[in-house]
Every structure is written in C-alpha cells, then in structure tokens.
Amino acid sequence: MPPVRYWQENGKDENQAGGDGGKAPQQKEPKTKKRKQEEAKGGGKKFISGKPDPFPGPAPIPQDRLDKFKRKETIKKRRKQHYKLKDMISRSEETSQMAQKQAARFDILLPEDAGFLEGEEEEDTCTISQEDIADAVDITSGAKYFNLKLSQFGPYRVDYSKTGRHLLLGGRRGHVACVDWQSKQLMCEINVMESVNDVKWLHTETMYAVAQKKWLYIYDSNGIELHCIRKFNDVLRMQFLPYHFLLATASATGFLQYLDVSVGKEVAAICTKTGRLDVMCQNPRNAIIHLGHSNGTVTLWSPNQREALVKMLCHRGGVRSVTVDKSGTYMLTSGMDKKLKVYDIRTFKPLNSYFLPAGASCLSLSQRGLLSAATGDIVQVYRDVWSTPVTKPYMAHRVRGTAWGLQFCPFEDVLGVGHGDGFTSMLVPGAGEPNFDGLDANPYRSVKQRQEWEVKALLEKIQPELITLNPNELGQVDNATFTQRHQDRVTALGFDPLAKEKFVPRFKKKGRSSTGSIEKRKKKVAHEDLRDVIRETVEDKMKVAKERKEKDLKTGVSSGTKSALDRFKK
Image 1 (tube, rainbow, N blue to C red):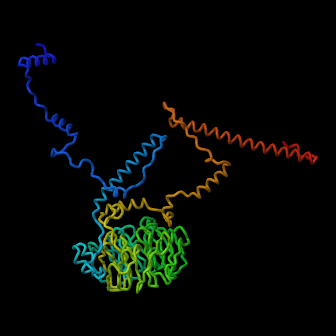
Image 2 (tube, rainbow, N blue to C red; image 1 turned 60 degrees about the vertical axis):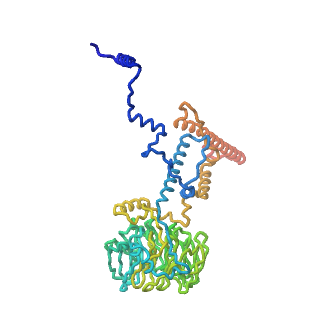
Image 3 (tube, rainbow, N blue to C red; image 1 turned 135 degrees about the vertical axis):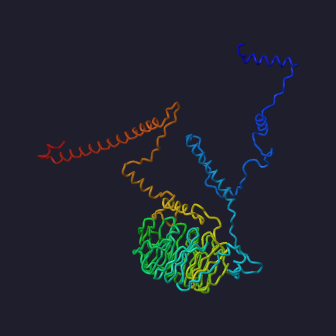
C-alpha cells in the first residue's frame, strides 16, 4: 500500500472522533506552556515563592544623598542641534546619572563613622589618661597605645607613611629605624654614626630620606644606602609632595631645594635670603611650601618663582611651628611670643588667637581637624580650633622627655610623639579619617598592588610647573593672553579673522550633506572671501604706485634737468 499522507491522517482522526460520539480525548498541556501562561498573567515576573514582590524596582535613594554626588547640571539641547551631538550629550548624561546613583548607593557601604571622646556629666575629657582609654577600648585598638624607650639616641623625629601602615623614626644621635607599627614588626634599624636632623618617607614604604649632618641620604627599607646627594647639604627639614614626586628641603644656609625622586634631578634651588630654615610645612591642596622665619614672618614658596609668593607677618617673635589643614584653607602658627594663631589662607587674615603659657614647639593637624600642640613634655590636643574659640584642650598627655616631633597617623586615631626618651603612640579618638580610598592609599595592599599603584602614579605625575597658589587657575582661560594673541594676529594679517561669522553650510538631504561636500562648500565660500581681500590689497597697491609715479613726474618737471640715469626709469 502507498504511504499514508498527512491529510489522510487528519481525516482519519476526525472520523474516529466523530464515531466516538463527538467526544475528543483530553490532551495534557506541557508544563512549559502552562508556566509561560502563568508568567504572562503575572506580568512576566518570576518569583520563587509565587507571591508578588512587595517592593518592586530598585531601592529608592534619598535626594540629599544624590545631591551630594551630583556632578553637573543638565545641558539644554537646542532645536537646531546636530542629531549626533544630541545623542552624544544624552549618552554622557545617562552615564553621569548612573555614576551618581552608584556612588550614592555605595556611600551606604561606608559604615565607619568618626567618633569623639565624651566624658560623663561634669567630667573633663582632658583628665582621662591613656591607660583608661586603652582599657576601655577593644584589644586591637588598645594595642595601638605603646611606648618605645630609646633614651640613648633621642630625641626622635617621626614620620608615618601615606597609608598609615609604616612608621619611620630618626634619632638625633644617628639612630634610624622603620617599623610596621601595627604588627610591631621591625623592617630595618641602622645607625648612621652622625647627627640626624629629619627623616621622611618617599612615595612608597620601600624608600626614605634622611637629612644627616652634612648631606642628604636615600635608604631603602632594608637599611641599604642608595644615594648620597651632595648638592643638598646642611638640610634641617624636609617635606615630600606625593603627587609631584618632589622632595623639598630647607637648609641651614637659607636654601629651599626641590629634588625630583623619579629621575633623581634637582628641579629648583631658591635662596630665600632669610637665614636658617628650621620651620617648614606643606599645603596638601596646592603643594605650596610654607616656611617660618626668626623675624616672625611666614613665606609661601613655589619652585617656579625665585621670590616668595606671599609674605605674612604672623608673630612678634620668631616662628616655632607651622601647619596647614587637609583642605588647604587654614594655617596655624606658633611663635616665641607664646601665641597660637589661626589664619584663613584664602584671605590671609587671622581668625583666632590663643595664648599658651609655655608656647607650642610642635604643631600637627589630623585628617578630621584635631590640633596637637607640644609644650615641653606635655602634648595637648584641641578640637574645632578655627570654628569656635577654645578655652580648654580636648585631651592631654605627659611624655617622658621634651617632645621633638609630632604627627597624626593617617586613617587611625593615633598620634605619634617623638621625644627625648623615645617614642609614644597616643590614642586620640576621632582623629583619623575612617574611610580610605583603596586606589590611592590602601593600608592593606599587597606587594603587587603597591607595584601597580607606583607605575600608575608615575604615569600621572604632576609637573612642578603646575604648582600655583590657586590650582583652579589651571582650568580657566587666560583672557588677557588670548586678547593679546588676537591683536597680534590682526596686526599680522591686516584684518580681523573673527569679525565675520563663520559660514555654516545648510543641511541638505539625499546624501548631499556628507563630510566631503560640506568641506567643498566651505572652501568655496572661503575662496570668495579671500578673493575680495586680495582684490582690495591689489587695488591699494596699484593706487599707491600710481600716486608715487605722479609724484615722481611732478618732481622731474619742476626740476627741468635730465640725468644720464633717466633712461633706466620705467
């Protein structure tokens, strides 16, 4: 028999169904089809429990948190704007809004908040001892309070690395040590066998600079001498500019010198003509160096100028210490007149003035705005110095010897004090920034991460020519220079090229507004303008030549005498 065709099978099934009394057998629907129908009824949403989501969509973000990360205003699109430009602007705005929302959401993930020491009723916080604080806090935080008894080679200068993980100590009598102070692991310890004036970490914790009696030396973290820089002699104080890779030094001979540690070259050597320079600090915002002098003045310096940018008379006696806050807004100075003064650098005017009975020999500011001042063997910490008048210290602690160096540890509530009897690590609640930028200064980075960060930082190094008093000027247009250049161009061309509006070709359809055709139309119009200019120039030249010829003819007729050379005249 021939094979059965599909229409015959359908007909056969229909006949069989009719023969059964019109009752067709019930076929089971496949599960996938049933699930799709249920999803279609529920709007296409899948739920594990089968119940609808009571909070549909992304979680809402408070408007104040969004405003905190707002980048720019919405650009108004003109009606006659090119469609490609409109698309580019809209995509840029979408990216900016997405980044704003992500930053606002991730801000919630920063739970660390800065807290301050609060006493009970009628209890003064400056009377609370370090031992009481160490007993009250957890074990990890309590271990950050310790004393190193190093009475043989003191007093000591102190410096923390940018990440706050490593500590560098430099004794006056030649003892130099670098320590991972959180794990109490000694990295290296050497004695340079001559007096040490200052120590400073460089861009990473693998290298540091030591200002010794004669010259400046560079060592690695194993204590091996890498360089002896004889151009930098009699150095007393040092500051490192991390984003410029510059080591600024102040010497006893009155010279301010800059060393580029990435290439090992001297960038600038400035004679300040103000004598011995033993008071120095930097402005973290614009990398300007502040120097204090014995005549009570504070000068601001940049490697681009031989003269001081600003000279301020701050004290009636010599300046003992200077420090600038993280935002570069306030400067605090202490002098021989036993006064502590707060200045607003934006206006160069004093805000507050405090009298300290013994004066302050060392000053240091924390990331959260706490001020530490050392008077002899007593270290006092003040809070909100520039906003409200302060009548009493926030905390106080007595060390074993005269304090010679102070510095707050970044991202930790710790104050390092170098004194005549060694080193003391104090607990100062609310001093450090609780949240760190992992791409800039990560205390927990590995060796590989540090190496990658170092390469990236070298590629993004800021040139010393860009160090200015107001860094916002770099993003602005120099109108005076632009006007002068425009005038020079007008003088050279003989006409103003910007006087006439540029020709904008009309948009045509059917492919007649391609890039090539638009450029052809622009060149055609430009040639027409150029023809007019050339025509006017030629007419002016012909007119001048005609006037000169007529003048020569008149002169020849009036003289009436002919010369043998007249035959060569045209």
